[in-house]
Amino acid sequence: MKSFEGMRRTIRTGVLSLATVLVLAASHAQQPVAPLQHAFFHVALDKSFASSVKTPVSGRLLIFIGPASSDSKPSDSVDMQMMAITSVYIAAKEVPSLAPGASVDIDADDIVFPEPLSQAASGKYRVQAVLDVHHSYNYDGRSAGDIVSAPASIDIPFADASAPALTLTQILPEPPDPLAQNPEVSSAIRPIDLVSPSLTSFWGREIHMRGWVLLPPGYGEHPNGRYPTVYFTHGFGGTLSALRARYGPILYDRMKQGKMPNMIWVLLDESSPTGTHEFADGVNNGPWGTALTTELIPSLESRYRMDARTSGRFLQGHSSGGWATLWLQTRYPTIFGGTWSTSPDPSDFHFFSTIDLYAPHANFYRTPEGTLHPMLRDHGEPHATMQQLAQVEQVLGDYGGQLASFEWVFSPRGPDGRPAPLFNRITGDIDPTVATYWREHYDIVERLKNNWNTIGPDLKGRIHLFVGTDDTFYLDGAAHSLQSTLDQLGGDAHFTFLPGRTHFNLYLEGTDRYALFDRIAAEMYQVARPDKN
Image (cartoon, rainbow, N blue to C red; front, side):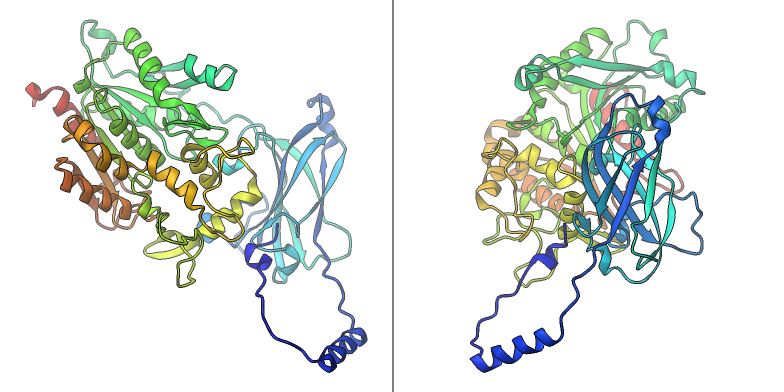
């Protein structure tokens, strides 16, 4: 797809005299303009897969083309760069069937970001092909099972008229188990795999709720002890395996070292083929909040020695996980004793990053003055726009992108059975009907204002939020609005705005990247065990 800017046309009014028209026509007839030559790549699946791939493969074929640099190594992969989003070209094509030894041509001027490759500046580039067999690149990038080519060097314009050839030669393997050499932590982590009756009924097929139970040090030595329990979930791009590999060792080691009190941590996977489901009941993803609170939690509390009181159940999550835990606390205030949400996605859609979704004639791409809405920043400097994010998501595929993920959670179902889009992907115009649905169903600030008399008594003092003043995705704006709302309602909420911190270094203290976990855990434990403080 060409860039949306290239698709727009300015309509000008005016009348040309017949003489002028004839002169222009004659001029063009004398000086024919050569049609723009498209840039193609020829991609084959290596013949060697005939012995290991028994059926033709399929997926979304992606070509990444980035500028060569003096420090580039031949083996370095070529991939998108979110902090320099227009520096790497991405071309795409759906491949329904590709057998070993067969090939396909891909037009890098057709479905492409940021612009047709034939318009790229002359120079030396590096290129790599990826067959995204799971259609999950939009969510977590390259993953095990994807088939890739070796990186190659090319010149633009191409040296001759033939299309550069790339061969898919490697199936990405499963990464090694990072806990293989850490048996103590590995034995403390127990898998969760529950077939949810409510989600299965919604989808008409088995739907599994997955995650991990991390038991604290000494759990087996105290058979009569019950532990406060933290329900933790990841942000956008997080996965089941990453929960175990990353957070399992961090949390266990901090408890073992005495930096955190001993508690049970339930590491919840909220990833799905549509992005993150946020543990919110919805018409598109199904009743995830209901499944968590009425099925999974009772099942876990029957198996492990968890403190099953409201004062013993806590929520914690970062980014999209931060929104999920805010939502769960405000939706089920009598079940959870508090949330400690960090850098949550917008809780007030007046501040959807840098966009007011409810403004008259709101546009997802541009302000009323015509400037582009930024999407991320680094040290205050914008590095990508909302329009660019929408464009690159469309090239990478229909499922799993951040913006599409929001629509799967927040939107009503459209006439085609898919989530109704919040905004027109070409013009950026926001659909006010869809925005109103978002507001009435999932705007947390709106929910608090409209239901405080009912839910307020159970929420007072239970909302804790941490965010950086230089949050990469401008999430501090909605946090300020939520704080103001709770202050006005008398919510006794606890907000911490960390000066200069971004989305990615919020937990840092000194040289300790995860120090904020200690403070959060201590505050939770004080609620659960006030007599021990």
